[in-house]
Length: 137
Ligand code: 2BA
Image 1 (spheres, rainbow, N blue to C red):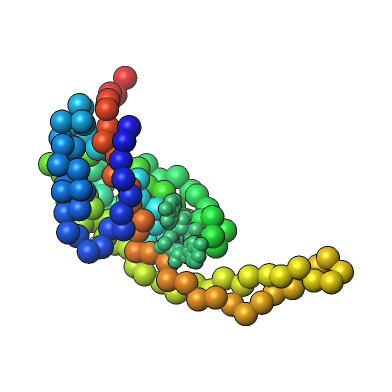
Image 2: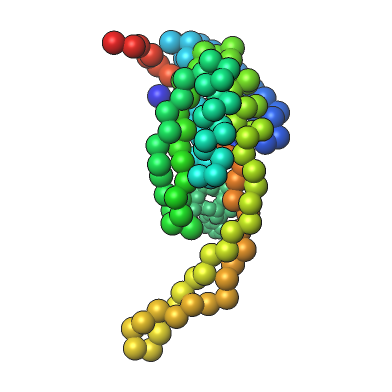
């Protein structure tokens, strides 16, 4: 599989234009969306996707920076339905503010907290991969 990541909003059709030869390289005609979303948004995203006939799988994951639970949603789509699936994901994910408390090593070895850092999380971090082969065995 090959692919490239991009943040879902705004919907500019980047996935379609970033690699003009993408249709040739995706032999199966399918693409795999890998969307990392916040826990709170995962249910609505899955519901909206399945409600429109997409098949989706949720994996419970943890973000490397905040170390907070999030969800990775896999969606195998035919190329002509990719754009619709991405719109659904975008429309069901919110941007939220979270706080990360960094620590510094203390004199007796115990880390002590520094000032919290504010980070904007989401909507969704989305990777679209060309799917070489898709089969249901
Ligand atoms: P986390 O790694 O827990 O990151 C949560 C948020 O913290 C990020 O939101 C970003 O605003 C901030 N952040 C992450 N790394 C940072 C850093 N080194 N310095 C300062 N701020 C940082 P999002 O960008 O919306 O990412 C949400 C989640 O999506 C991430 O959770 C991670 O699980 C995943 N993710 C984002 N970019 C990724 C990538 N390039 N590859 C794999 N996973 C990614």
